[in-house]
Structures are given as C-alpha cells and as structure tokens.
Length: 275
Ligand SMILES: Nc1ncnc2c1ncn2[C@@H]1O[C@H](COP(=O)(O)OP(=O)(O)O)[C@@H](O)[C@H]1O
Ligand SMILES: [Mg+2]
Image 1 (tube, rainbow, N blue to C red):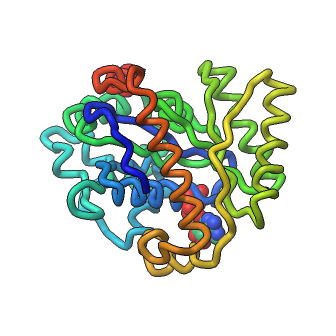
Image 2: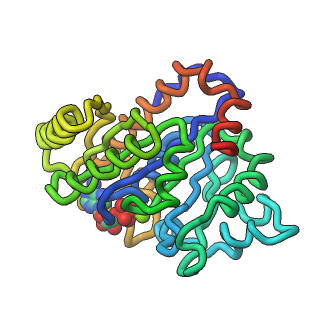
C-alpha cells in the first residue's frame, strides 16, 4: 500500500450497500478496513445490518455491548466500540435480532450519531456496513456518507436489485455519486462487462453516470477466511481476492487524499450528524 500524504483532520465516511444479500458487503467492508489499517489509517467499521449482525461473526468476537446499548443513557462510545486490532482498527457492533431496531428511526439515528460525534473525528475512515435492499435505515445512512460503494455480482438478480438501490437513492434522496465493486467475478473482463451493463441501465433510464471502483475475483480463500473468522487479507494476503481488495483500498486512499476541501472534519461530521 502506498502512504499518500493525507490531511490528518479529514474523515471519509463510506457506506457499503447492495441490492441483494450475500454478495460480499461485510467481507469487503472488513477487508478494506484491514487494508487501510495496515497502511496506518485509523478505521471504524460500523455494523448497521441491524437484525442480521455479522461483522462480529466474521471476526470471531462476541462484543458485550452494541449499537442498541448506545441508545441507553450513560452508555458512552468507549463502552460500545470494540477493538479489532490494536492502534486503529475498531468496530461498532450492530444490535442483533432486535425487532424494534430492524429499522433505525430518525430519532434513534440522531441520538446514535450525537453520541458518536465525540469519537468519529478521531478516525480517518468510517465504514458503514449496511443491510441489503432499500429499507429506510439503509437509504438514510447511505445518503449520509460521503462515498457509497455498491457491491454487485455478475448474477442478473444482483444487478437488477443493485440498479433498484441506485434508482431509489437518486429519485428519493438526490444522490448521484456511486462507486461499483463487482465481487465474485470469474475474470477481469466479466467484472468490466457487469459494470458496463449496470452503467448502461443507469445511463439509459436515470441519465446517470456511475463509477467503477473495480473487481474482486471469486476466490476460495474468502469462504476459508470466513470459516476461520479472520479477515481475508490477514489470512491470505497474497491471494487474488486480497490483491483485488488492496487495489480498491489504494484507490479509496487516493480519493481521500485528493478531496481535502470536501472532507474537512467539521464538514463531514456535520454531514453525518445533520443529514
Ligand atoms: N470474492 C469472493 N469469492 C468467494 N466467495 C465469496 C467472495 N465474496 C464473498 N464470498 C462468499 O459470500 C458469502 C457472503 O459474503 P458477505 O460478505 O457476508 O455478504 P453480505 O454482507 O453482502 O451479505 C461469504 O461468506 C463468502 O463465503
Ligand atoms: Mg453482511
């Protein structure tokens, strides 16, 4: 990883979303975080896949407290944020299987971010691992972050569902910037073709250009790392999928380094808390 000079006072918030479930969002969120952490960035992964928490499972940790506890009086971010790796890789566990939290209403969302406000600016990146689909929580969180990464696979259902996410965010939230990652591609060409197909639909029906962040190949090391509950890049740093995710992390790092004016700490916190 390159060590780009970055503004120490900027926090880049990124949401990871998808139309269809099981396309690889959580793996991508964790491994991007791990890659950037290894390049000396301070990372916070926030599991917002409420009801289906799985960042903790992929990490093999069972945190005592979670997002829901943060809503209780007297509970501070320090009580809830768990350390994944020392010195800059933290994670905020979702509330798992709690029906009343399946949708985080606006008040809850605001109190979560008001509490987190004191710590968010300490991180270089905030990565929101969101649920699949177009639920209220997903849409509201996705429209708060500075960057949105939509994960699709070459399967037609993943593409049509991914297109639906873009359409709703554009039409209902005026969001027009999306970066696409094609996961589980057989080869680079299939990744590009999949992106071209999605881009074509966005252009034709929404008059929208989307960006291509890149491809992650299908790699048996991914399920292997999941079974071992270790981030892929830690488990198999040289494998194809790890190399792919490292390239994506480098691009994201470059984006952060190049977009300083938009990313002044105050501005990003304001955007996160007042969206
Ligand atoms: N690049 C890949 N190659 C092979 N298997 C993958 C890849 N990405 C994801 N998977 C498999 O898909 C499963 C679902 O991934 P996950 O990150 O949990 O998806 P999501 O968070 O979108 O539901 C993982 O358990 C893993 O086995
Ligand atoms: Mg997930």
